[in-house]
Length: 357
Image 1 (cartoon, rainbow, N blue to C red):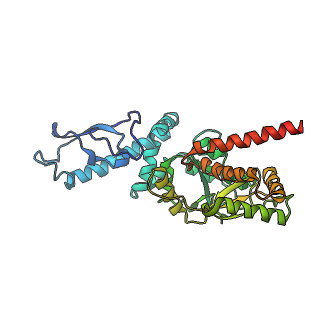
Image 2: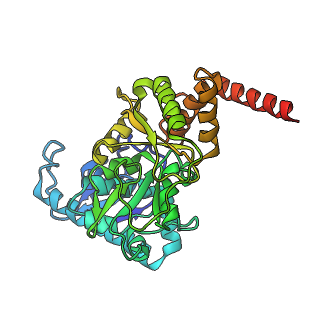
Image 3: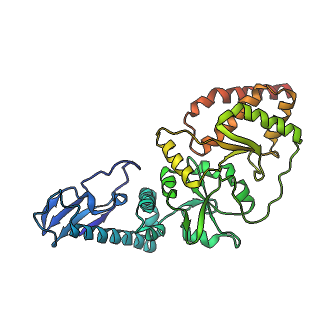
């Protein structure tokens, strides 16, 4: 039996299986040219030939899926393929890293869909993190680096790895030196709808409004009075309308001016994200906007609102901060719409610089 050839990944992530890669023989006689049921769908990238002496020659295409011999072959093949990939990871880590870049999304799909093999597949998962220095790391390695008082595994979702590294949600975790998984493709969200814990540690999305973190952190310093911030909060609420559930002062932001947080169940958020990324009919769940009272941009906006609540720069900046948050998370559907707004903000910045020269 030959069934361990890895072609280059050329098939779409959610695309239907391209059949014809596994040929089925019985005593060297071709039974099926396209034996798509011999392996689970997430191993569809494998190519090979299966020759069984136990399979009757007169088995029909209609009965092949229910044939007990085929079911046994499927289980055996799946176990063997996972074992061979595991051996590759153990004995040839550099080759496995190349394999992961090509086919890692399929392993994530298996974690989401194959409960029977999940324990073995979890060992193969690899992620970039805020501490992996551009290298892939396993969940086991992450667990070994967890802080002594850390119970959960934290992750952030974004449009790509660079965006994940810039996520405002990282502020409180950086302050506490907590490592975060950087997740940036659609299969991550699909996987997370069913993968909620690993070896006793819950996986936690750090965009959770009620996220509780281990360790102490100094309070955010603010130069904005309560009255000025309330005026700014009210103005942002009016501008953003039903796109947000609330506008509030952040207790955790340090380097970022704002972020969007959610109180929705994490699994529901991941499923909603999948639907949105696939272009299905779904609306973005309104989330709460947090503003960093200690950030110079927020302080300047509060000052502008105090002078003129209808300042057009406040309007443009509020819209831009909201879109920035969606852009970093890969959820902004029409980034081109930002261009006129960005141009107006640049014009105002240049004019202000000229007036102060």
